[in-house]
Image (tube, rainbow, N blue to C red; front, side, top):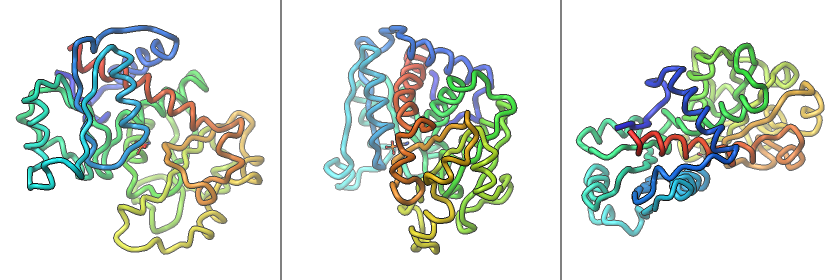
Length: 289
Ligand code: CP
């Protein structure tokens, strides 16, 4: 059974194998690895991209998806997280895709026998987001070693930042962080944002995770945009070959201005397309094992 909880438990070779398979899918490879299988899509936190691209991946592999909505589920009658997941296993689902606000929620699911693929856990891990980030970077540059990447914004609350930083360092990238003091995290390589704009090969912008803040952001959205927002002037200062990425959803006029969202350096929508391919590789890996 091949769960996918995080990337830190996978070797560079295992991650490379997933990326290689995702690349094949991006070039038109077909698989019916999910034919006759039903996958439960259990999102206990909101999602647009991850949930629907996992569903698209399962369908592209010939399988079917059951979704559920916490607001109208029996959780409103007191059913627990574990018991809810156990229901879908008992119904005969072949795998489950789960997003939950609790870090390492999967530790509660040790008695579940079907494979579990994470759609993100709290502020901890977002393995398929980092896989699609890696795939997008490899498609652009053909390598990881020596590339300079800066992740900008709400580092402390971002499962994308935490997963990217760990895995990108292992792949030989020079990883930096930038953003307001209130979102800094100790131990990460901090760099001034305007220096990062000029020096990086890859800029990964993040949204402020307001849903995880204990109180209002100290900095106003206007000040954030002035100090850390990507605008036309900063775009012009980037290296010719540099690219912009964002896991999305993005907030126009805060971390990124309108004119940068679909500019020639933006790979934001490419990332979303790649999300289907890496999730096809992850689902195939889980179901074929
Ligand atoms: N990037 C990402 O995880 O987006 P969703 O929250 O829409 O899934």
